[in-house]
Image 1 (cartoon, chains in turn purple, green, yellow, brown):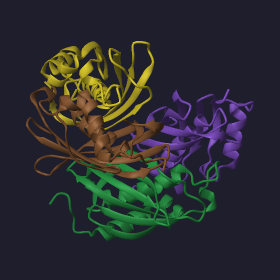
Image 2 (cartoon, rainbow over the protein chains, first blue to last red):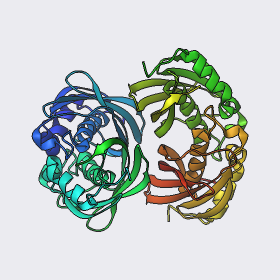
Image 3 (cartoon, rainbow over the protein chains, first blue to last red):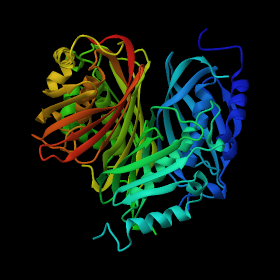
Image 4 (spheres, rainbow over the protein chains, first blue to last red):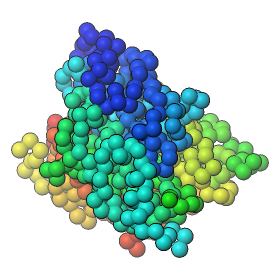
Length: 141
Length: 141
Length: 141
Length: 141
């Protein structure tokens, strides 16, 4: 089938994360992976705080975006982010541990739609992300 | 007036950027600032690259989000990001210099709406960001 | 409590729908209602088709927006749409019966965040909507 | 060129609007059209009012969506809405005359990005719309 490959979602995710300098800087850890699904976490460090004393929106977005990329590419079908949005429902603070869980809403031939929920260590939702991707016709790894 | 203060947009922007650890890590430089307006730039470093060899979406988002925050808070009226979206129209690469320009669409008492355009050193647009903020009733700095 | 009132979610929903000329034109029927929740349906008529022969995006959006408004205002706390987005995953056609189900993600004092899923009569998802509202400090009805 | 055809943007727009039952119901009039550009207007009627006594969000969205569709398809390259968002900055009322102006941000081979600004008869901005489309490889008309 055109949308799958012999390589497992886990193998793709590990390779993508391994090549991803920024996710490494963020300290992202892979918790779960599957077809169209991913769950990752990271801990907030001092370098990630903004001028208002809370976590920079770019850091929360980056976590969601990484979860989204892992879910999009889980079938080893190269997919790049196209349109994304994030709503922040609660501020995050230094040393918070944030978990992002990506779920597939639509898996089209050329496009995909995913939602990502970010929660903190008290299981409070801090952000909701929605992302669409465009699928290139080549392998992710 | 309730939406302004004696402190200039420049003084607010410099203080917010000065307190912002993540914007410092990104290497953000302030180019221009005004009421409801900001223009900043950054250079892409190796740490900002993702698993597909291009700039991590979180980095581009963070640049736009910082420009947005500076424009939102330019009247020293504490404003936090609420709902934001970004559409990526062109991939960015290592050593690209990205400029983000934020413009105010709506300056409400409790809310604000801004667009941010990101361009690269060849003046090609790489992303369009739209953000709404919620205004708290206190000073930003 | 400030966010509730003696009037039930059902009474609020019926009154809002009763006053809503455009929802009546659309032929919206209330299926379920609760605090922060609503489920409505409508049938696609000839007048709702666009120039490409499928349902006009504004009609699908309107259905989601009505479900969103009912969920937002379910505690009789007047709430108006602020930022909304919709991703279309499948085209809808003449005589399709579309169901919109709104769920509350965040119920803040001044703001709220909701998602709405639209499905057709074959239970295929046709759109995903995300909306934030701003809460005024008065009753909806 | 693959993205153009012998038919003018005006001929495409007139044909799309002519086939569009819902835009006709809305009373949309074409003011201007060009490659990647459109400007249309409509007057608010009693049937378009929601349960809060203001224009239903679906009506404003529909106007923006129609302007977006005309701009997307202006080169007669069939394009369908994929991800759209709208932020409402001011309520509209009965008999308001709303104008929607669509501008092209990105014209890609498979995708496009457009913004639409809605203003009222007092030239006040009432909404900002952002939309991405997916281009099929066939003619719009």
